[in-house]
Amino acid sequence: MADDLVILRVVTLLLLGAVAALAVHIVIPNWVRNLLRKRFLAAIRKSGRFCLTFDDGPEPRVTPALLDLLDEEAVKATFFVSGMKAEKYRNLLEETRRRGHEIGIHGYRHVHPWYCFPFSGMADLIRGSKAVRKCLGSTRNFLLRPPYGKLNFVTMNYVLLSRSMPAMWDIDAKDYRPRPGRATVEMVLDRLSQGSVILLHEIPADSDEAARDKIELTRTIIRKVKESGRAFATVSEALEDKDSWTQP
Image (cartoon, rainbow, N blue to C red):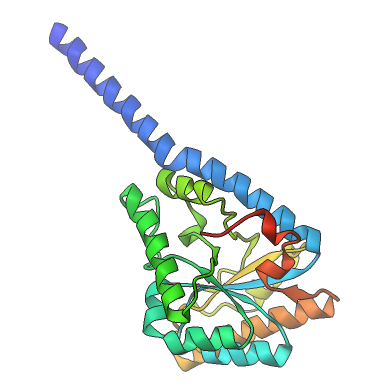
C-alpha cells in the first residue's frame, strides 16, 4: 500500500510538472502574443489603410513576377523573409528593397517555437535578423513576424525585452494550399475590415502554372480592394506612431 501511495504521488508530481511546463512554454506566451497582436492591429486600424504582406521568401519562381505585379498596380508591400533564403537569393532580396518595398524578419529556418528547444526559437530569430542585415548591408532594425505567428517563453521574453511589437495579421489567405482560387479571394474580401493586414506567401510553386495562379490571386485581391476605394501601405507606413515601439 505504501509503495502504491509513493507511485501515485510521483505520478501526480510528474503530471503537475508537465502541466506547469506546458503553461510556461505555450499557454502564457500565447496569451501575451494575443495581447501584442491586438495592440498591433489596433494601431494599423487607426490608419484606415490595408497592408499586403508576404512571408517565406524570396523565391525565384514567384518573387520576380510578384514584384512586377506590385509595380504595375503601384502597391508597396511588406516582405517577411527567411534569413536562409535571403542568403541564397540575395539578388531578389536586394531587388525587393530597391523597388521600394519594406523588408521584415521571419526567422532563419522558419522554426516553430513550440516544437523546438526553447532557446532554439530565439536563436533562429536572431540569426535571421543578422542574415538579412548582412545581405542588405544595413545596421537598422527590421520589423519582426515570428514563424507561424507563435511565441514560446524564451522568444516571448526576447520580444518583450527588445520592446518589439510583432507584426501579425488578421486575414490569412491560406494561399499555401494547392491551387487557391475564387473561394480564397471571396474569403479574403469577406473578412476585410478597416485597416486589415493580409497574409500571403512566397512559398515555392511546384509548376509555372501554380506560380501564375499565385500571382493572379494576388492581382485579384489588390484590384478588389482598390475597387472598394481603399488604399494600401507598408506596415510601417500604416503605423501611426512608429517611434513608440522598436524592432529587434
